[in-house]
Image 1: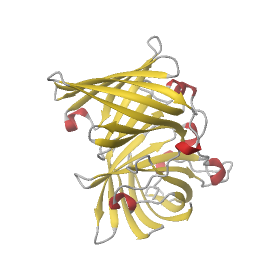
Image 2 (image 1 turned 120 degrees about the vertical axis):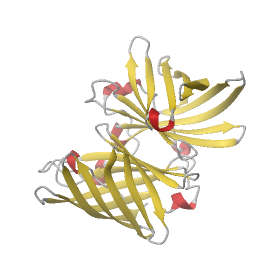
Image 3 (image 1 turned 135 degrees about the vertical axis):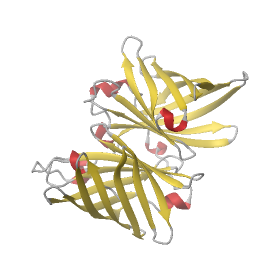
Image 4 (image 1 turned 45 degrees about the horizontal axis):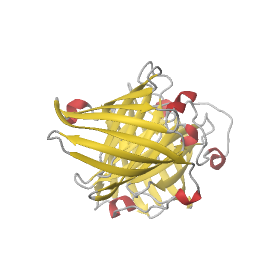
Length: 340
């Protein structure tokens, strides 16, 4: 299932490009030169130390794979963590907002437990560091405040210092060291599978095609859109990653979304990344009787409602309502599996 935010898609005609050709996997460089400050693609190793309030220290080691996605508009960081409680996995999506006046860098973290956190950051050229602050959920929602600083020593080492407070009280602090090992090769592409039935039902590895219509309420104008998507599971199978390209006869629009599942709250979490930087966050609830997920946007709140119906293993139908300013858009679509 892919929905398109109408206000970000221009009406009109433009040069068409075959969607399969434009949706190229594993680009070798970022789309924006400012994104060169991020870690270079490749295999990295990581050591992390956590310090609690009682002076205790816990350490973990990890292997990290870094690659570009979405034609260089997103950086994906997939990590396997070896801890005392066994292996855990995380996914980080780094993006860039060229039009923003400050905090141009954005980082969205998908944790092993299904929680999602968002950060905004700014680049300090003199210190060669990225300084991050948590932006999602807002600090008032969960009371947590994260402060992180990534310090870059050339292109092959990153040292990170971080602290976590809850409602103003320190919880823990830590530091990590990330070191580049080598370029990624074919053996590094591990074919992961979803870790639970809740995730297994929402997608399937391979190419999908969406046919969608959207109608604007102010003039009743309808546009039909075709979207090609490539789905894959993140390392460890905790997240479904979708890279997509709108092929509608208008200007091309790339996007990426990630979906995960929170087993404690029994909720799906969904982040939609636009090629020019904005990120929209959703929560979804499974309705077993109707075999559907109802998605509601929580950031920005109340902007979108989507009902996604699971017709068959390789077919979804959906309806949506989107509110942008004073305008409302309604739509419907079909998403079908093409090939692996």
